[in-house]
Amino acid sequence: MDKKILPPPQTHATTLKSTKHTQQRSRTPSPSNSETSASFSSTTSEKSSSTTTSKKLSFRYSIQNIPAPLATQKSFYSHLISLGLHQIDSLKVNYNKSALLVLSRQLTPNQISTLQAGFPGSKIQFKLLNPTRLLPQIEPKPITFSIVVRDVSSDIEPQDVISALNNFHIQKVWRIISAKTNKPTPLMRIVTPDKTAIDTLLSNGLSLFGHVHPCEPSHPPKPAPLQCAKCFTFGHSFSQCPNKPICPTCPDNHRSKPCPSAVSNPKCPKCQGNHPAWSRDCPQFIKPSQMTPETPVVPIKIVDKEFDPENSDDDSDEREPFVSARQFLRFITKTLFDLFPFEKQKIQSVLEHSARACLRRDLKISHSSNKIHFTFG
Ligand SMILES: [Zn+2]
Ligand SMILES: [Zn+2]
Ligand SMILES: [Zn+2]
Image (tube, rainbow, N blue to C red; front, side):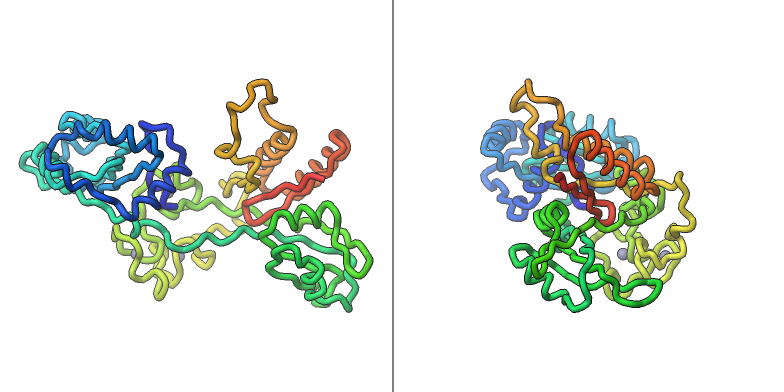
């Protein structure tokens, strides 16, 4: 979330990934005390040397009270350049005469004074943001997928399944109870974050007491309505948001994180109810019955490493095909799922049949909300 707030530096070929690393490193910034000159020109040599060691730090400044005539992206950027601040990694001027400035070097007090003097008669402020406060401290939840094991007789316990899979990291196993009859079924559900376990089970089945049980991925979940993580309205994503950010857990439009009422006493800024703005309890949350094929939904995300464009080595060999057959299957699946989010089950079964008929390959797709993982047999 934090890396979305900060656009990637435009002046470098820096990926989002390395931006994240940079922010982590910048928890312990080491300001250059030796620099007393108000000139900004010395940053050039420093910066190129830090680029070669790939240890680029980033310093984020919140700027307030920009004089109105200069409070546009074009005029404020040009003015900073005219004041000698040439090494701007990124700048975002907001509606309320404030801006976020990202630099690869920390400004000295002298440099800040020089910048402020460049806005005569104004109360402009440059405040260094504390990087640790902006970084979410919570570990992201592991993505788990679930598998259904068939034909499991009633005397087989979940613990038997866990023991049979002791080579893998299995999170949870339980017997599926029929929603219609409320009675145990011959099906067991396995939940795991381990994609090797998913691939092994889907390709080979699960061997229990000398019998191999077929395994299937669970049904695709219903598509979730697309809700903006910045203004919490439905229908667009964070990156397309035209609105000001709001706090999701209180109606006060405070700028600082974390929100004082976030955990203990959330109050929805949309309806004033006792839940956060993203809660399904909110009367403004789009219910499944209100969704139509036109409702914008959360797009599908492929979590397989092989598909990650940041990890692919594009320039390795120009004679290699543009994409592999596996990548193409992933591409087609994502495109169809995003086009027809209500038809995922049907698309999946057609794709599985086509892969078998045309490519002589087994294809299985596992779902974890909007995230999908492919198993190729
Ligand atoms: Zn928005
Ligand atoms: Zn708040
Ligand atoms: Zn609400």
